[in-house]
Length: 382
Image 1 (cartoon, rainbow, N blue to C red):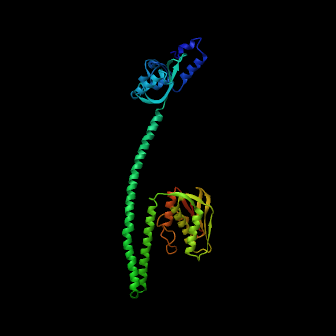
Image 2: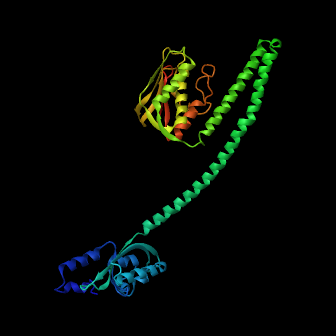
């Protein structure tokens, strides 16, 4: 096989195109070699010599098998035999090469058979690009992914254990605490009914307070259990007609106290995809919150609609109620955190925490803006 060599540059018959090809091969940034049918290198450009840490003379004394990693030689030999036999006209793959120093590198290899005018294979032309850094990066990423998967499995196992403990705790709370609460409330009622004439006004008041406190603690237990279930139950997203759902909630509150003068302004045709039961809880809590804190307004105004915000398009519930100081805004979504005294406004301090947890589970965000005496607006995205 005639190799491109410097000695041919003085040949008058050496074509200009061959000179150009010779110069291009010499200047190429990737390794380029010509191989005889027996696998020996007949030509190697400077990039190939540098990559394998060999001189041109050393390269001509080597075959492709000499520079391949031992584990890749058999496959390389098979592929080259198919090229030499005319079964393949080219071959591509990534192989490991061994430098003179013994260092191993990865190369993206492309080998093309070179036929003569009669079609007989004379040798092969090969290009090799050093992709060692990419392979090392891929292996590092693979190791990181495996490590991440292991951590996820460990955390999942821990989370499962925690959830099981939480289930057991909730069961204990639900059953073990309710019995003494019922007893307290029951005995207080018995004393009020059977010993009314033997108690003075102060004693009767104490018993009423015991009963009220027992009932409130019972409600708190119910709210806590409901809040804990929100993190464990699977979401069942469906298409929800939010405007209609809000109208139903508004009707519930109108029916609960028909004497109040409350104007509901609900935007039409609002639609979302979410868990129907949980979003109903969101609407019930937010609209109920506005209903409660507009008790002193005549008329009270409660709005439900959509608007553009810094977080994109969001839904909102707005009222003209008592509002609150934004200095306390970071507390309103925490369980049992209250801004207004329970003597002024009833409630257990769990409603907004429930809303926050539901919105978060839907991948959304909730925030509030308010001013004392000028109402409050709760924004949320889904």
